[in-house]
Image 1 (tube, rainbow, N blue to C red):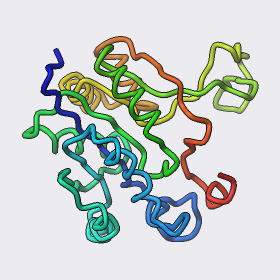
Image 2 (tube, rainbow, N blue to C red):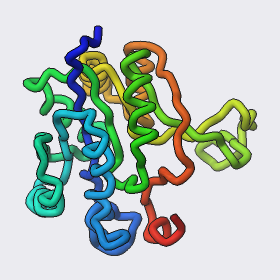
Image 3 (tube, rainbow, N blue to C red):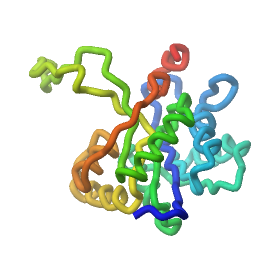
Image 4 (cartoon, rainbow, N blue to C red):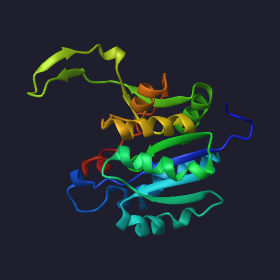
Length: 226
């Protein structure tokens, strides 16, 4: 179990191609409020003083640029830059493997394109992860939720009150989420997020209140609407 000398780590995923932005630049490298999105996405974790190690997954050819962007954040915390995989799932797995010799007790996994994350959500996930072994932030669904088939036909109507939108950071006992990803790496299945992988191979994932402002940048318009 978690000890009094708890060690916590963060994985920031920023290895995607950002093709849906349609501008030829990685969204994590764009500026928002005169600061790079990647820097804004990691700074609240540093400000929380809860974490010892940080892994940033990036395309191999972009690691140098990512390093330069995060230079202003040089602290006692340790930054580890890891080449990402062809999918987010592979990138997270690479990040988890990079932490093996650090032996953290827990790890929080966060999207590098969520610059509106705040310390309140981080601390809530952190505390619930210690208590439950796994925790994610969620916000209530505001739209009518449907499931559809491959032809786009509605096949079921979900009860909105029973659905939530998952956010990051998602927190886990490090040993358990590494074991889960090792299994997922072998079963040739693409999962929706790390919580689904943990839920399949380990057990229940708790939830904590997220923040409606904690959006993920997917399209260029997302930067103007938040």
